[in-house]
Structures are given as C-alpha cells and as structure tokens.
Image (cartoon, rainbow, N blue to C red):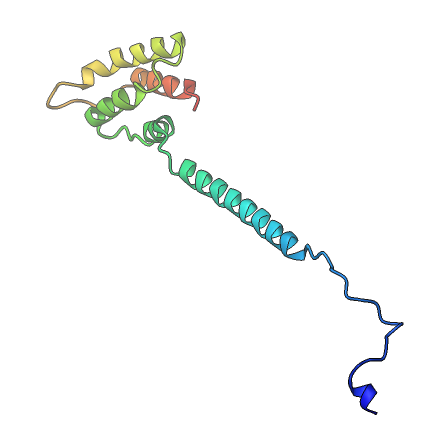
Length: 135
C-alpha cells in the first residue's frame, strides 16, 4: 500500500501534455481593429456628408431670392433684381445680353424718390431673364 502512495506505478495509457497553439486572441484583436476601422470610415463619411450639407450655395440662394421678388414695390424690386441677377449674368453671352437688357429697363425705376409700377415690357424682360437661368 505504501508503494501506491508514492506514484511509482508507470502510466502507459496517458500521453504527456503537449503545447496547443491558440490563435483566437489574435483573431479577436484583428476583428476588433477591422470593426474599428470600418466604424471610423463610416463616421468620417457621415461627417463629410453633414459638412457638405451645410455648405452655402450662393447660386441656389440667389436663384431662390430672384424668384421670390414681388413686383409691388418697383424700386426695391429693381435693386434686388440687379443684385441677384448679377450672379447669373456671366453664365453665357445670352445671359449677359439679357441681363444688360433688364438693367436698361430697370434704370428708370432706380435713383428716384417715387417710381411707378413696372410696365408690361419690363416685366416681360425680367421674366425672360429668370427663365434663362439654370442652377
């Protein structure tokens, strides 16, 4: 009985411990880095989209303001048409010519204390210039 306690019995069926190469930690770190890169890219694209959304577009703003002008106060309308129309005057030769024609028609409504309402020919020239604009 004493010999059994000393572990002197040779073991023939049990193999010695072998080293197991475990790579799951490396796989986990790789997946975490990949997810972090994809998430960073998504956040960057979201930031760029939000930043571009906030960019002020002068042509679109002036186009909107040009079409919002009321012809009730002809003096203010003449100044506004001159201001907002100048943005589109250099688009082409036709735009330049139409803008100059509109300025000639609007000249009589500027620089005076009291002015009349727009006549039909002036309104037609203004509408023609507005229709030519592409944004």
